[in-house]
Image (cartoon, rainbow, N blue to C red; front, side):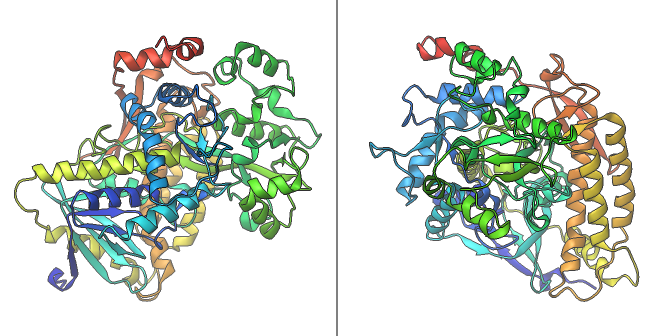
Length: 611
């Protein structure tokens, strides 16, 4: 008989799950608010995809072009997200990002500098002005280093190599987390008043992804099972440039900074093909002037802002089209060439990580030769539906989410560089929101012993079966169906195939077996991750099937155009009373008038200060 009193129980005010940029920033703020804070890491502290955001952090500081302001950043983000974004989240983000970057500098971050000594900023896809504050091509690494160094002195407790299994509830509200130590398999209960999810995305459900092993959609599944709503899950971003060769590193990110610093995309005929893929409606919005847009449309290679810096969905689909037309590179991508655009010593100075990454992993010298790149599943625009001011779940009191695992900020497509400022802004707001929630909380929270017992038995059943399915084979089948049927280009028949496959895989996963004990057992870890990946995959496929249009990171071959009707709705998934997933349309919130004016304004009116 299981006695939960024998299970280690740790009490905190707040538990933050995920120790990347969003989790660290949330934990720093929670601690600063005077809350006892525990930070739970699935891997090691700082081992997070924040490090992969190499190009820079987007903030309208105006250091390189003084015309930039929060209004331009707001407008660019809304238009990049195809107006499906949560207006208020985008306003918070655009207004607060500069302060968050300056705060990082105060905490010790060392940014590249302009000649005047200001934080340097570079161009990036979808941003009208040079807006990305950067540290060479290692910006995410510098942010993680800074947050770690600052955070460990704030009094928080850190629990590394611990995986969350289930959110515990006292009635409707959060009261804790059941987790286990990956090394020993020992279970642990974190009793708390609030939980902040900062678990990133779920790219490991796809075959080709920039995501590391940790990114199995844990936050989505934890929130879903606790009764939270998932929103915008159909919008998955395929970063245009992941490494395609050698196979051992296929999918690893090649920063957009390569293109921001002048790199060009070429097909196997040597043609700079992006000029063919500029949508006419994009050009006037993305170029500096209508005249500049016309130069683009005439394929004028002297245009100041190159078409390689169009939004990620456009570039990814263009590369996909070139490969399908037989104009790809030898290993199924295209060529990204910066060697002909910049001197070798400048490339090494501006892009040191990219130089070493290709030199060491692919034996390619990017100062002399082109890189082979192609689309890789990179980022989830969707996630837990939250209150735009506090980051609290719309349906589960005491549950908060920030960073990639939350929804609303990015709409249908995320602009490059917005992820780093997103996690800083909303990590902080989640910490403040948790403080406000706990301050108003009346009475103590109590752990439901039956919930704990059921969850532990479900986890240990995997170890106790005499026979069962192999978790690695189930994962491989899931990756294949998601890659083949829920990729860059989608169609009804393939989405239905994916959903049918997912149902079969759920049945197989219910009988999965991991031989051995709970100690040092990677097969058990893999088996426990299957549930998260299946919930994540089903949410993406169901939402993609319902949204009958093409918008941002979601492209339907059978509905190739944007729809004026569909821009009125977000798609929400939640667990029904019968345990099955319910996916339905949700009418979007109307924007405040001042934000509508900014988003609709002409560039000329914004520059003239009329709006």
